[in-house]
Length: 187
Image 1 (cartoon, rainbow, N blue to C red):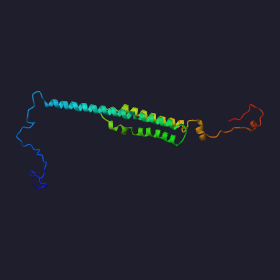
Image 2: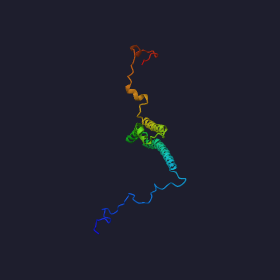
Image 3: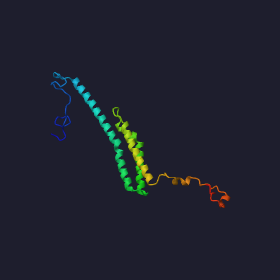
């Protein structure tokens, strides 16, 4: 036998003939046994598909809650990092503070994109989204509080002194040379 030549002479060494040319009856030709009906099997298939859809909806809701609660971990980590940075104004504390402000802002801008994979007619995403928003707003409040403790927020009257007009002195010449102690300068 020559190398490369098929045994059967068809050119392929391992070939399977899929066309049924036998006289043996196939499974389609055999009648179903008594008590068996293909309709009940189709009903079971529809019940299984319904159960699969319900399980998928439950899974999506569970994952949506996990995503909604994920900012809590970030909130705890940022709080610890801010505590470690201290209350003095230096490069590390400012970087941590602005990171604590930026992360919730970017998360709040992309709420729709974050919950997009969990959209389904059977899945209600309102509560997970509200929890996600509340936790991110808490993170934003933590960043603003840190800005205040660093003294970087203008919350005191002395922070606005440069924008106030100088006081006007209303004095009279007689009041300056008066010996009467009841006369005083009027501001």
